[in-house]
Amino acid sequence: MSTIGAYPGKDGFKQISSQIRTTVETAFYGNNVRPISTVAEAYRLAAQAPGTVILDGMPVYKPEVLGLPEDAKALLKRELAEIRAYSTSFLFTVHMPDEVLLEHEELILATTDFTEHYIIHPPRNKNAMAEFASVMDKWRESHGTERFLLENTRLYNFNLAEKAMASSVFGPMPLCADIGHLLMEGCCPAEWVAERADRIKEIHVHGFDGAKDHVLFTGNEAWLRDLAPFVRNFNGVIEIELFSWAEQLAAQSMLAKAWSLAHASTRKRR
Image (cartoon, rainbow, N blue to C red; front, side, top):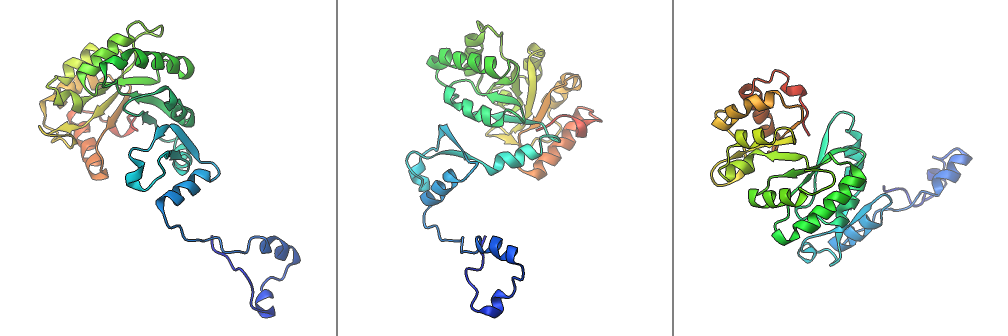
């Protein structure tokens, strides 16, 4: 905020007529705006601000390209308060970083009071599966066995992660079925979800145009019709993974029609 630093004379000071007001307000009169010349300085001030959460386990990728300090970490502050304010009306899931590490638990701790599910990607490195299973067991023990959903980013890695979790004391992980990823790999979504129906807690829907995913579909695709019987009896979360409001609204309308969901507007979504 910018305030009056000084009154030029008695006439200006007469604007304050109360002694208590004079005492209280004078302490706050000052120029609180100053120029910030670098991104690094802005980052430092943000990190030092009251209420900021520094995620030590989430370093910024290539910080030097962004003009940030070499040891810059992801920061959370304002976003958490704003998201939390909507938690009575909306259901939230959190996508964890692609390569989960034990240090990422700080993200869980910062969001656990308003998050229902955490989406987990299987490791890309097949030699990391044992450590992955260990992290998942620790998190499931501490934060709930049904809150962490293994997503089929790539089926090869997904299947390896499934094998790694087979001996977990908590049993197999619940699942997030990503329809677009299944289409990319030439897999029939309806058959895949039917084989795992009792474990799927979320469905992420987006199209695949032969070159890229996360695109809007037409509503006439065979996979949409084939999924209808499963979806009509599904009580979990259906999330539309498109990145514009216009596409979101169009996709919602098409899904409601293709799946005959008269209650589509009240179905759980993030």
